[in-house]
Structure formats: structure tokens, C-alpha cells
Image 1 (tube, one colour):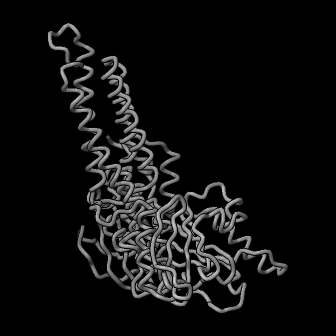
Image 2 (image 1 turned 60 degrees about the horizontal axis):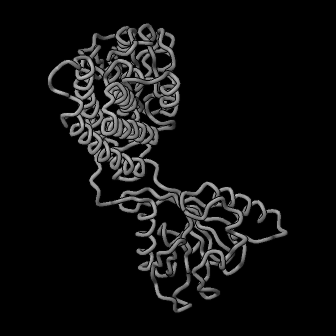
Image 3 (image 1 turned 135 degrees about the vertical axis):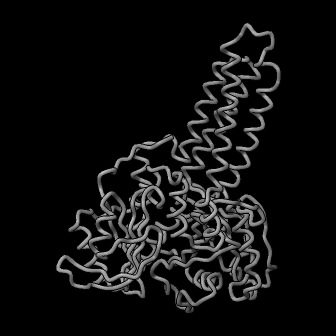
Length: 457
């Protein structure tokens, strides 16, 4: 499907390297005026697709800098348009001077993600490949980066395209059965449609499972460490992060603010937040810390409720701290951490019950393996599952809708042999899957996706 070229007459430009000084700075230009800009800035005829060492000049013919210029003619460029890339010294002053000259020559400043958006609109990449660019830039673990590269190379798109092709073929067969009811063979009851539909659902389930892993690799999980003062929360944060992130003292109320750290559990990004000890306090500074602690607790994917095992070894949440649980809408994401087992003599272990319990010592790093394994299980993250792509929540939503429609179509086929209803479910499922690659989408969705990109991408 060819997309509407919304920007056919506009040329855009942006600094593509991060703000600040660096060895190299890059400016990108895309659009119909890119070739004229190249000739004016370099005062040379650039050989397409070749790196050329040039002097970059302003409107007064003064040399601003020297570096590498590369011109990519349409359609053989990232955006599918004439594209220019200038590589100069990474001084913000030089970069801004050159960008000012390019704007004066008729280009406009690019919006966040506009280069990638043009690549999508010009059918150079699918929508989820465009998203993979942003995910690659934002990746926080090696596994997430590798999967984002695979998505960028089409691993996810290929799976969705194959499913859509299978649905199109099946729709053709179903609609033929509807259009030619006088044929001697009853296509709806001969088993072929049912068999192929079940095969598509099975394949979709596999893709769905991989996508769930891809979302976890992309987003990670947020784990909040909570508990009373001096339970060992900050010690646990330091032990998990492997560095002295939080100050640890015997004085109650040492932690006054939330402290953020990040680690990787076999590729799963885990955002860990240490919070102030929860108690009634007359100190206004500590009160603000406690307020912030509750804000993080209410937004956590998982809560580690740390208790001092020298004070209690109770395993029932309601008996440990009923006041805490009464303030939560659900307790399904809580794990009780019996800390200081080196002092209490409690066995290091995991107790699986309605509210799981992990007994460990934050001062003995080898006991943390239990907690790390538990967190992966709570996140439903399988480090052994071979996933080939990164994914987002919108992809999961589309896959879920498609699967529901296909299961409904299978039910219609089994119960009523209603070909028209089956065909409609197949059509809706095809559209749901096509939203992932961008074959069917809305301007609002595109605006939301690309506005989160970096300028210059």
C-alpha cells in the first residue's frame, strides 16, 4: 500500500547528534531542496552515495568548517527523498551556524521523529520498524538492543505480514464458499477452513508470546522497595545495584527521598526504587519523603515489602502490617522480603503462597539469587525463550484483538457454519494485525508515536 506523501514540497533539516560538544556533529537534510542545499553549502557537485571531504561555507562564502558531505538521491535514502548528511566538528556553535544557513536556503526545522515518519510514509519501513528505531536508541540492556535491531531489520514485520497473507488466502476461500453455494463441495464443512484457521491461531499465539517478551525487554518492570524504617531497604537497593546508591545508617529516617537505580536480570530491565521508611513522623521533610514513597508504591509493577526478620518471621501479609495493605487497591504484586537472615538465623528460601515470601540477607550477595529469580518469575519473563524482536503495548493490544476475533470466527464455524460471520471476523482480524505494521492506521496514532522520537530521527 502506497502512503500519501504528506511532505512532498517541504524540505526538513535538523542536528542529528546529541546536544553538547563532541568530536563529530551531524546535520541531516531531507526533501526536494536537499541537492540545492548541498551545492550551495559545499560549492561542489557531490557524487551520489559517496563521502566527499568539503569545506562548508555560509552565505558570505566564508568557510564555517570542513568535513564530510554525503548526498543520497531519491528513492535510495532512508527517507526515500533526496537526503544530505553533513559531518562536521561537534561544536554547537558550528552546528547551529550551518543549520541556520540551511534554514535560510529554504528548509524548515524538523519535528521530533519527522525523518523516520517520512521513511514510513514513503514505504521505506513499516510502522513497527520505525518504532524500533526509537526503541533501539532508548534500549537499556544488550538484549533489548539486539531485539530492537532485529525489529528494525524486519523480524516482527515479517511475522505479521505472513499472518496477514494467511488470513487473506483464508478469506478468499471462505468468501468463495459464500459466493458459490451451488458447488457440490461444501467448503465450509470440508475441514480445510477449520484446519487453516486453527493453524493461524496457533501461529498468532506464538507471535503473541514473543511480543510479550519483547514488551518486557522494551519497558522492563518497576520494582519499589518499601517498609518501615531500618528494615534494610537501602541495604537491599545497594546489594541489587552493586554500588553504594543509598546512604545506610542505624538512624531511622535516613532515606528522605526516592532513589532510582536500574539493573538487568538476564536482559530484563528492572527499575528499582528505594523509598523512605513508612511511619508517622512530625518532621515535614520526612513527611514529604513518605508522600513520595506512597506515590511510587501506587505505580509499581512489583512491591518488595521489606521486614526485619529479627523482629518477625510471620509470613501472612495481613498479620505483618494490615495498615499498609489497607491503603492498596490490590496486594497481588507484593512480595514479602524477610531481611537480615544472617542475624535471625532464618533459612534463605522462597515460600510460594498467596503473598510470596523471600528470606535473604542484603549483606550476603549470594542470597540475592533467590530474589532475582523470583522477580523474573513474577514478570513472566523467560530468559530461555528465544525472542526475535522488540514490541510495544499497542502491538500486544492489536494481537489480542486479532486472536479474539479469530477464536470467535472458529466458534462460528464450529457451531453454525455461518460463512458471512466467519468472513467478517477474518477481515477485522486482518485489519487489527495490519495496524501493527501501519497498513491501516490513523493520523492521531502516527502523531503520538513519532512525537516521542529524538529530533534528527
